[in-house]
Image 1 (cartoon, protein in one colour):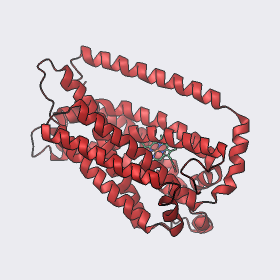
Image 2: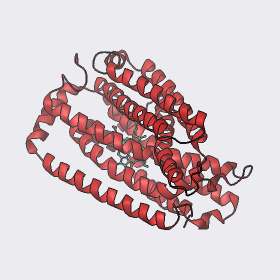
Image 3: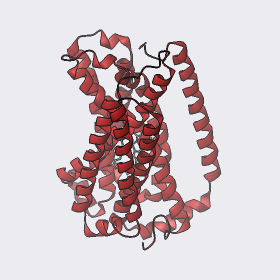
Image 4: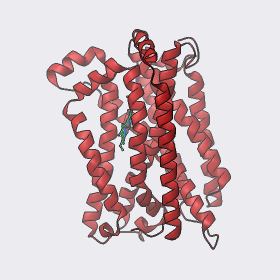
Length: 369
Ligand code: HEM
């Protein structure tokens, strides 16, 4: 691994890992919106007792309106990396799935329940119910998403710990340190606030620009605060995680293979901080500030995803997987994937357009059905 990622990897391996990473970034963008959105709404609902209707403000109203759709998008966008991971790490991924046992089995029911709860959160009905019920519903929803993410984390760690598999099979106990799991979860929970802030920032900016009185929609400072705090938490947790990982992981992450991506992550984080500082100072969501934060976000997502992959590559016998990638490339199916991806993207874009037109007719979606 003496060349920068993905150069230096055999051609089929480089193609599959790159496709995995690009599609995984898309999954992260949508999943972050739902995860951070539901956590923010939980905080807003619990605080509602003391402040004026936080859950009715544009930020919360937009999240409530869009989270069910974004969850469908996260699930749809999860399918492509799910396919590629089975090609790249078939043996490790399947074994981890089996060893995760009942925890893996409950992920789908938990996600279905959370999906319905999102629709309840979107409806007016819930907000007429007593405070305790509202709080219970939002806490259950955000906890479900954190649990699903936790299962993905454990599955990932399991896949990377081949030496522990026999013991896990015999005892059913997972040998991971609580610190490692918490640091990993902090990376994606903190990062999810940065992503959510950018996406919902554009949504609020659009609303601001179409407001008949040209007024500014409140929320730029809340989003700036959430994004910068989330980013800081994510970067500190990520740095500590890499520092505590083995020598092999550290030398691959800080070597030629992925050092440029470490720098990309840092530059992306700085750009995001600049973008959000501009909006904080003007107390308004501006196109330039949002575009700067978006560019930084894309750089950070790409950088972190490659670093994450470098750690996994150092933890498994990666070279032994190359023949399997050659075999998969000879089977084909890439054309079908591209056609399906274009068709799905077109259908989703069309749905968004329909929803946007419907919201426009209903007055910018300010009302909650
Ligand atoms: C809202 C529900 C979901 C949440 C909160 C969620 C969260 C996560 C998180 C946090 C990770 C990274 C774990 C880590 O690196 O420690 C992850 C990875 C992943 N997720 Fe999701 N996910 C959700 C739904 C889905 C669904 C429905 C699919 C598939 C259809 C999916 C496919 C994947 C894949 C393929 C990975 C990469 C696994 C790996 O590299 O080991 N996710 N997800």
